[in-house]
Amino acid sequence: MTRWLNVALKVSKRGIHNSPSFLTGAVIVRNGAVLSAEANYSRPFGTENAGYHAEVRAINKCSNCKGSTIIVARRNKKMSRPCPKCLEYIKSVGINKIIYYNWDGEPTVERIAC
Ligand SMILES: [Zn+2]
Image 1 (cartoon, helix red, strand yellow):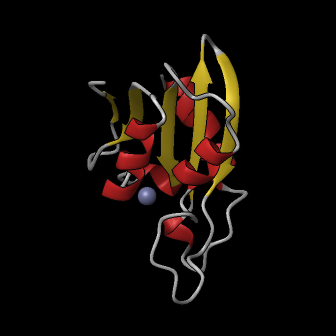
Image 2: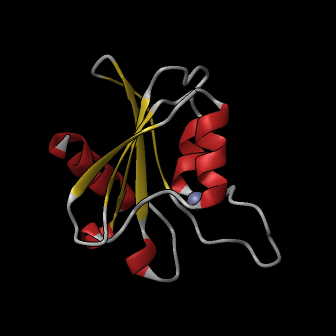
């Protein structure tokens, strides 16, 4: 679990964001293999959706996410639970587990009921 969080932290550094503390990385894995890995980008002016979030960007690069796990890490191990819009998208593609850092910077696993 920590290993994948470290991968997500590394991926977060690829992001483009005007506030570095919001740099987030998302990695999607299944059976120990990485399906995709993306960082978040700044929200373009006037954009309402979450298409710039690392989770959505990673899912969009993944042809089939069913039964996979998404690992989300934010710079400096800050709270990285996906936002409601990302959570909705994560559920819709059949990802059934999320790993992220909670408010205390501790790794947290959340299972998604399908
Ligand atoms: Zn989000």
